[in-house]
Length: 77
Image (tube, rainbow, N blue to C red):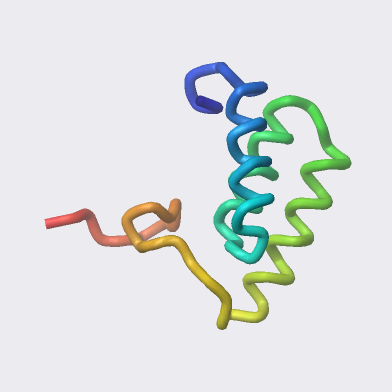
């Protein structure tokens, strides 16, 4: 939704996802990106910090590889 210009709907979806799975860093990163697109810098910074803390732990829940937006990942075969 965020990529299609429906930023407000995308933010609502990411906020719900973050409330259901607050320890998944990729969700926090996606929410931070959505906030940046909406011009909500303070909210983006808060979510970015949450993402950094969760990523530093390294032992929490993660999205499957196909759902992550990581550079250099291999394409599905």
